[in-house]
Length: 91
Image 1 (cartoon, rainbow, N blue to C red):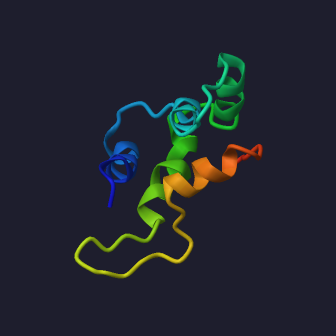
Image 2 (tube, rainbow, N blue to C red):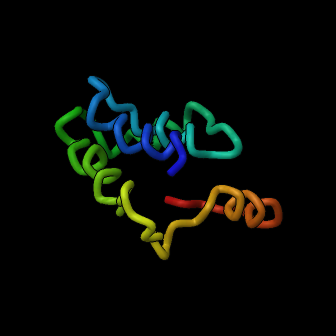
Image 3 (cartoon, helix red, strand yellow):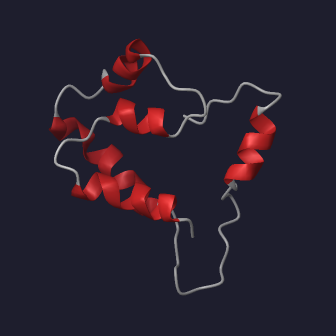
């Protein structure tokens, strides 16, 4: 499993402040404007509203000691190849 995936799973559980818009921005090929980042943050007026977003990464199946592959797991290379000719929104 890529280190970036493991960091993504760990970050929401360990960060004191969780800026959802900036997390989304880190996962995009093209950087988002401050206005778009603000839109992603809008539904979460305070930290108590972010509980679901903080727990979500831990719900993504991951078995480090197993050879099991998650069927819906798309490799970054596949996303990049697809997005070269298509406008993609993951969320």
